[in-house]
Amino acid sequence: MVRVPLLRKSGSARLRADAGLATVRADFESATPPVPAFQWGIADAVRQTAHGGTYDLSDLFGLGSVIVTTGHRSLVGAGESGGGSLELAVRTGGSPWATYTVSIAEQNGGSVVDVEWTSDRRFGLRRLPQWWVAERDHTEALVAQGYTVEAREASLSL
Image (cartoon, rainbow, N blue to C red; front, top):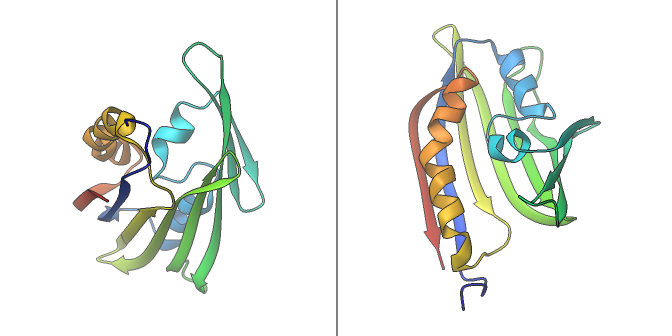
């Protein structure tokens, strides 16, 4: 029963950065975008790709491994300023895992980033402890990358 895929994750966040639009957009288009920090943060190896990154992850005892990839595409052009919207897709083992929609705008000399996410697959109850720990520490991970979290909401649904 704990393995039956019942739950789907979703949420939203408003982030603020002192950095300019082009710098913030480059962060989200890099191999290590701010939002999936726990995936690249624990990876055995991180490689830049043309549209994101690839992470090699192994379990605690090295008995299993998975490849996580991120890719991005523009939804609204960045223009010369670097703002706009993009979609960040995370795949694991070649299958869709999560999608993030990111909007970046200039405000008060810095950048405001609105992020909405949803999981592209359901997961079982055995993943709840992992989700809880990640949610508990996610704000601190974003702060460590130079982002102020003005609002953040995450939820589970059937």
